[in-house]
Image (cartoon, rainbow, N blue to C red; front, side):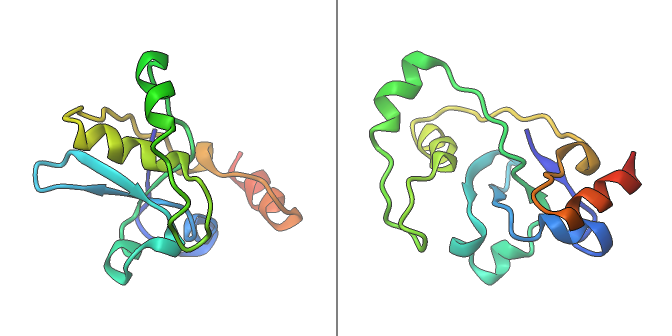
Length: 118
């Protein structure tokens, strides 16, 4: 799933540090880049990752072993999997959900924001 924002203003600032969907010139998803690893140009992308992904298990288990922690946070990013699949020739389908449905609540401030959206 993806969430497309008009901008990162007002309550949408909560999405600013989320991963970005990088699409090619055919509008296909090529990969997800985490904010801390994104270039300044990629940080301008307003299609963000709310963290919902689904994979076939026959593909997932062999490919999850390909993840590395060679990134700015030294973490194993599950969000690297769509990029691996794309390089293998898979098309990455997506559906977009409304930003207010994707917003996480990780602080009292975010709870207050979420309460104003319902």
